[in-house]
Image (cartoon, rainbow, N blue to C red; front, side, top):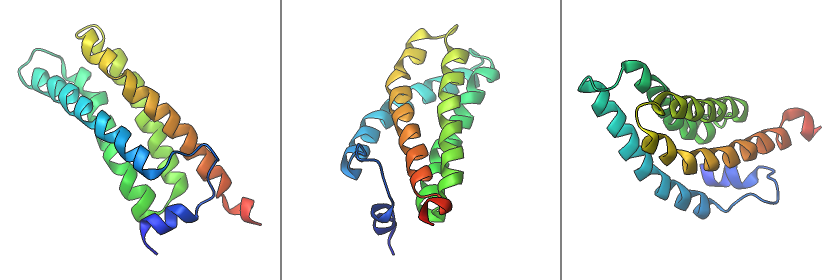
Length: 136
């Protein structure tokens, strides 16, 4: 079964956005992430920001990029839920870490935080609805 067939077979809340909408949202967010994260990493490399500011950005990037292989490759809903909670938490952390140095970079994360908040609730719901005990 393909990853799309597997995802379509899962029980989901009625408010689940279609996959095309989810893809469109990420197409808008990824350039923001690329520019702001790139700015932070370059500033750290130039010694203009302390490395501790880049740490939550790095953890977030790893967690964000890990979600798809965990969710759709491993098809592990509980682990994907844990991963998205890390993504959500590190967005808050990175916003707080960068705020004293660049409020613009911190504020540019608001759409990312809003979407990941919605996606986290969705992931929690999907995991709950497809928990093994729910099927018995």
